[in-house]
Length: 68
Image (tube, rainbow, N blue to C red; front, side, top):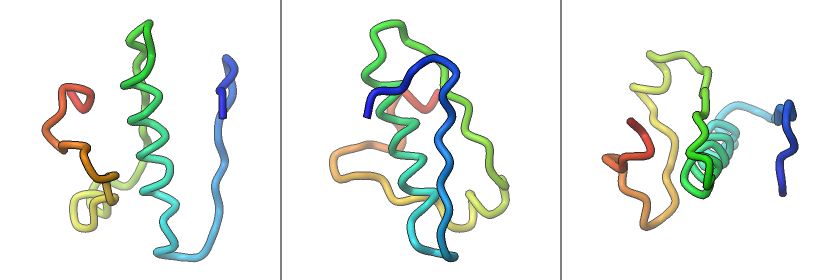
């Protein structure tokens, strides 16, 4: 999926089906593969994110520079 300027993904589904993990992976990939080093804004409930973080694809380190 190639994102065009001003596109915003919309994801819906039942609780705990992987929506946050999917969008988090999409955000990571967008930031990591961007030659322009663009910034990604991920909006979510901080307490929920900290208590139940999204799953990361195998090989992605949570301490990666992409997250800073």
